[in-house]
Amino acid sequence: MTVLVTGGAGYIGSHMVLNLTDAGEDVVVLDNLVTGFDWAIDGRARFVQGNAGDIDFVLKLIETHKITEIVHFAGSIVVPESVADPLKYYGNNTATSRNLIEAAVKGGVKHFIFSSTAAVYGMTGLAPVVETTPLNPMSPYGRSKLMTEWMLSDVAAAHPITYGVLRYFNVAGADPGKRSGQSTPLATHLIKVACQTALGQRAKMDIFGTDYETPDGTCVRDYIHVTDLIAAHALLLKHLRGSGDSTTLNCAYGQGYSVRQVVDTVKSVSGVDFLAEEGPRRAGDPASITATGEKVRSLLGWVPQHDDLNEIVQSAYDWERHLMVRNR
View 1 (cartoon, rainbow, N blue to C red):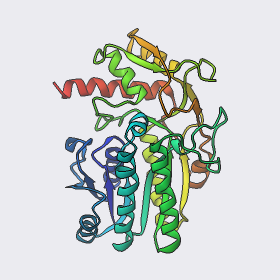
View 2: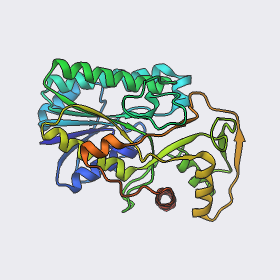
View 3: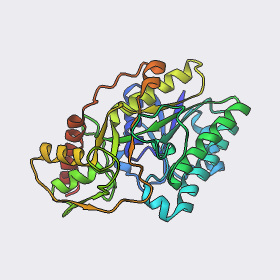
View 4: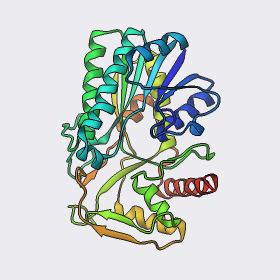
């Protein structure tokens, strides 16, 4: 069995590659390196540079490397950018995924795992969401991901392929061995931005909106350590290989933290009282979104190992310090 990881040079994808190669899996990475880094790809995997939406190219890749499973991370992920440039998101996310799925079906791929997002839920109130919560994405980013979920469901009903969808909540942290982490300099992830500000790489950071209907007025999110998230992927792959049914799962801890709480935690971990400037709301951001994570625990036996905000922030902060040395 050979696993194709699209976007394997990116933040989350590179961690998946590490998990698979650590387990002795045969892995092929497909990445166009527009936002990824070739140095982030584990040397035990085979790397092919190219476009995941090129059907003929991917079909040849499937045939050459005898690909049996695809884990699809490639795509664009910035909510405000999707509002400003929706066609980019429907192209990079929806259209690319559609073509990749077609190549998978034509190439006889058995299993397909897709990285989706909590953004498919939209405005949910303060209650934790479950997989059956009504879907109402507020941004082109969320809609572009939901369309791919629908495509997978329809295709699996018509062809002999099973799939797993993992709806990510807010992913943060880095590989404990500092082999990979969030490396995009201008990434918009809150914890990364706060860590960069603490280390003097940014003069200040912004808090977008302080008038939400949350306990302290700032957005509340469910943060998940990237290592725990990838463990869920590995368990999902095992589930599908064991003739498990196609499924959609939330990946979250069930504990929400506000933007202010995250900023305070980064200040505590770093020992730096950096400037966090309050500003207006950002387009496409719901006030609060958390999830119970009960289904992923019960179905896959997923047991988080890093569900502590201080630990998540510490690993992210340590990774930023590592990057500063690496990029000198």
